[in-house]
Length: 199
Picture (spheres, rainbow, N blue to C red):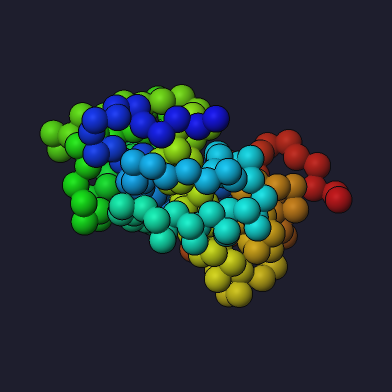
C-alpha cells in the first residue's frame, strides 16, 4: 500500500525519471502534486505495471493532479554532463515547470541537488512507497515511451517502438550493423567488448 505523503502538512511534490539506463534518447522526468485524498487501486511503481495500465493511469493522474509537469533532457546533454546530472537536471526542470509551487519535494533514489530553498527528501525505491513518486514515474515512463515511438518512425531498424532504447541484445546487434544515430549516447558503452551478436 503506497503512502500518500512523506510530510502530510506540506504541499508535497514527488519526482522521478525514466530512461536513465537507455543507450539512446532523452532522460525524462516528471513532477507531480497529488490532492490530499487521491487514491487509485492500480497506482504503483511504473515498472510493476503493464503498458495498458500505465496509459490508463496517465489519464487519471493528469486529470486529478493538483499540478504536474514533464521535462526532457536530450542525449547530447547527457553526454556533456553525465546521466546522473542529466537526471537531476530533468527533475529540476520538471519541478520548475509546475504552476503550483510545492513546499516539500520527495525524490526517487538517493541522489539529488537542492531545488532553490525547497526542502527535499531522497527515498530509495520511493516509486514503490509513495503515491506522488509513483505517479511521476508513470508520467515519465509514458511520455518517454511515446517519444521513442515517434523516433522509431525515423529510424525503424533500431526497433525503438519495442525496446524504447534500452540495451537489449537486438538493439546492440543493430548498432553493430548500422552504427549509431544522433540520438545515441556516445559516452555509454553501446557495444560491450565481448558480446554475442548472433540471435
